Length: 347
Image 1: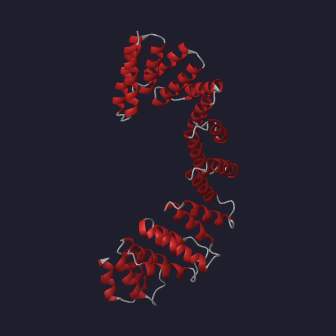
Image 2: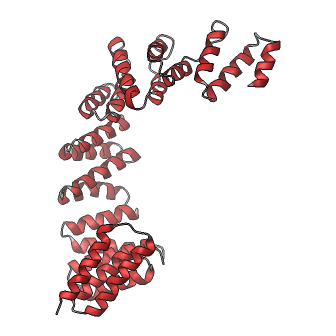
Image 3: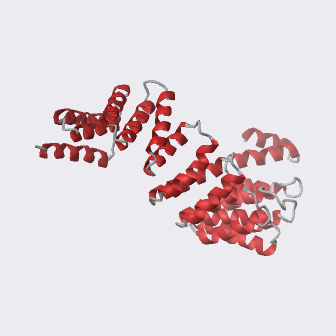
């Protein structure tokens, strides 16, 4: 910057130097200096209204920022993202977020044809936690762009957060059907599945997750979740088939393989194949020395079979494995200690 100032002292009207100085001041986040320099060169250069909006907004100059935002739509920015992006980036939280919402509403009153404003208003309202208003803004935006995947994903998320799980499931299914390759569609649908599981709506969760699983059955995370949901719905043979496939295809000697083996063991217990379950838990423990869940499940099953001392060793090993892993799961430690106390009460 010092070199630019020295050069301008020699050639004060050199437009390239003046423009370069503005760029350096803006990138250095010297907002007040940048705006002062803009005022100095007004009439000599074509000024970047977006950057001026950004600088005023970051300085908390609400009136000036608002005027620049509205001015941009009179000077070639209609239908473009830039004004909204500058405003939303500078006024992203707190009182400034409320200013953003107010200015967006003002724009839409003056220019209802600025459809992008409806999307950005919905997003700002969602960030502010005003979900019913956000939903209405997003729905209004869809009148102009009915297949916009990002907006549709927001509506799925809002329905889930509002606890309207039936609507969230329906919207998620529709979104996934229209945009099966969209990461946003898959992510929001997966969140709805999780909410349904937490609500213990296992049949509905399985039906929705099956849509995700069918899109990419080779994905191990989707396959595992599908197997778990099948098990929760009592479809143990189908669950076991997926679990066995995961074990066969997982990289050897990894925590992931051990975790799949543990899941397979739990499924085998459900089918009453206890000796096979014991073998699965033992193999999981051998595969990964810090696999605590398999050791705990092994201990519980050994206790069930009356093999008390072996059960004690397995449960103590599960506690040590959790410590070695650096686990802070209080409930997990408590669960293992509960089973140890139960062993002491056995005849």
